Image (cartoon, rainbow, N blue to C red; front, side, top):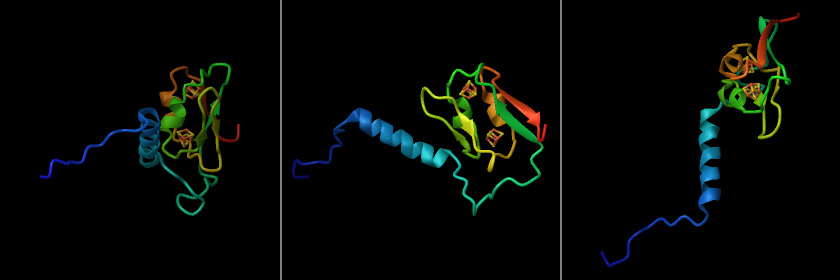
Length: 107
Ligand code: SF4
Ligand code: SF4
C-alpha cells in the first residue's frame, strides 16, 4: 500500500439516501406494461374503491399493490388504474383505515 486507500465519503447524504430508496423501490415494485401482464380483461370479479373520506393519504396501498397500479404522492389521495388492477385486494387488506372497499365488479 502506498498510503492511499479508497474511502467513500458521501457528498450529500440526504440526496443519496433518497436515490438509494428510489432504486430499491424500482426493484421492489412491479412495473406492468401493456405488453407484459396485459390489461385486465373481463375476469376481474372484485374491484377496489377508495373512500377518500376515510383515507389519511398514508400511501400504504401504493407501497403494497403488487401490480403497481396505484398512483400516490405524499400529501395526495391515491388513485387506481383499473386498466391493470387485478382485484387481488392487497390494497384493501393493508389499508390501516379501512378506506378501500372491495366491491363486486359491475355493481
Ligand atoms: S386490488 Fe390488487 S392490483 Fe388492484 S389496486 Fe389493489 S392491490 Fe393493486
Ligand atoms: S392505505 Fe388507505 S389510508 Fe392509506 S393512502 Fe391508501 S386508501 Fe388512503
